[in-house]
Length: 114
Length: 114
Image (cartoon, rainbow over all chains, first blue to last red; front, top):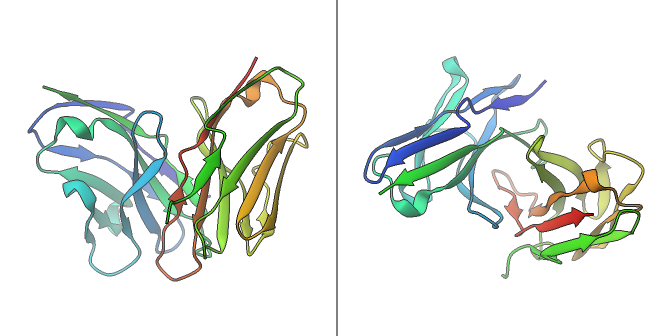
């Protein structure tokens, strides 16, 4: 069965420090992968997506993610975190058939210390 | 485009009452999804439509839940009768059928059943 695991429920980093959020997936074929961000009381906003091609994907707000098939991972990174990045981050895999149906991880809450 | 529009943003109702959540997808999008977000279960897909036709409702928890899409610009999710365990944030999302496209989410409806 398809699944997504985000091992870190909560992460705290200092402003200006680098960030890496982990995501591992289980999928029987080449996956479609996404990272969404949710600010308190808001909907989900797409940060970046991977469908095929270059395994290093650039997104909005200075985020990037790297697809590593051998590790079944799609970790999200940012070189320097800003206080406004504090939010909840969700990794998701697109279900088979490219319907757009998403299977989400449990989310990682990012706290940024001044 | 104004994005995916959901109403109401907040709903408080008493147990046993009927609740109707509404969604207007982005114009031209072929797929519409209803997700539910809870602390215990995270984000889970309830049902999705393609060209106004329900395709997969396997995530609908019980017969108390029903969803309709009478036209391309409107969908409802109804709970009758509502129960306290239905309290959650309900998200609607839409996507067009083109290749390598992502789902866009509404702001969500926070439902509280007392």
